[in-house]
Picture: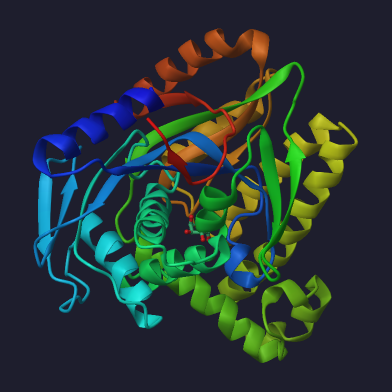
Amino acid sequence: MKDTLLKNIQNSFKSQFKGEPLMVFSPGRINVIGEHTDYNDGFVFPAAIDKGIAAAVQQSDNDFCIAHAYDLDEYYEFTLDQISPLNQGGWRNYIIGVVAEIQKKGISLSPFNIVFGGNIPEGAGLSSSAALENSVVFSLNELFNLGLSKSEMILISQQAEHNYAGVKCGIMDQYASMFGQKDQALLLDCRTQEATPFKIDFHDYQLLLINTNVKHDLSEAAYNDRRQVCENVSKLLNIKALRDATASDLVAIKPQLLEEDYQKALFVIQENNRALEAVEAMKANELEHLGSLLFGSHDGLQHQYQVSCKELDFLVDFAKNSPHIIGARMMGGGFGGCTINIVKKSELETLQDTIANVYKAAFDKDCSFYNVNLSEGTHLVSM
Ligand code: GLA
């Protein structure tokens, strides 16, 4: 599937532009646990997957750049000296955002053409945007020998997201997409940006993603609002980020907080602890315990952080009532996208049939299932 994608993108490039393009694949990501902790300098436990964005890039003889979104069959032409964020720019902002952030570092680029396409559904919460940003920065770095390190590149991608897409995201998505390793999830300390890889092998169980196929509006604004709440509480506590707070620190300033903000900050502190506990559970091969941490995470995301939605809650409730699913939660920013589930391998097919039916009956809508393979991060592809 990945090979077909790469071939299609390469062929599309060659049919429109001169020269042999440089080919890059940049994956999406899952996150086992540790949600909304990254911009609080906390811990996350993501992994790159075998679905993502393929990009074909080469220099242009013209004095402008052309970007072609293969899946949408849309084009965007721009010059390098006149870049600013576009209103409702969609995918265009990720490309010009990365270009602008490279330029901000005092690096000058030459005109280029790019064709990209992907196999992660947009809005699934699998970070197609981070995959796209990383594919652009990685391929420009190769093409023009910019000498940027991977750590510098993910910061460029993140800034593009902040300043061009308008989402004040943490570093999890860009990190996982760039640094992913085959079969491993990365316990990432978002403060130091150092990660420890852990092999994911759940024996009789496996990970299953279920896409609600919904993406609710205003999720960007809600995301930025929550980040602001966390920063405000940190300021009150006189600390750099909520990573440095305990639940009892928070109790001490509770009278100064709205109840809902107290709950949000408490969620972050608890979720950070859950991420660390999950790693211990995995090391000790205590899968039931790991599963219960996932359910706990969802509960907090639903009631305290308030970033879930009825479709996600429905799937997690189903999981709680199933003897063959030992843990489940919503994954990513929230308000739609996927749940991540730990399911019994031998029951996979039956479960999928049942869930498809009950979901359809409840929402008159199909959900989708993805088996994930943990894979390497953004890389060049020779073909
Ligand atoms: C989105 C953001 C990430 C992270 C998650 C929530 O995916 O891009 O930085 O904050 O939401 O964990």
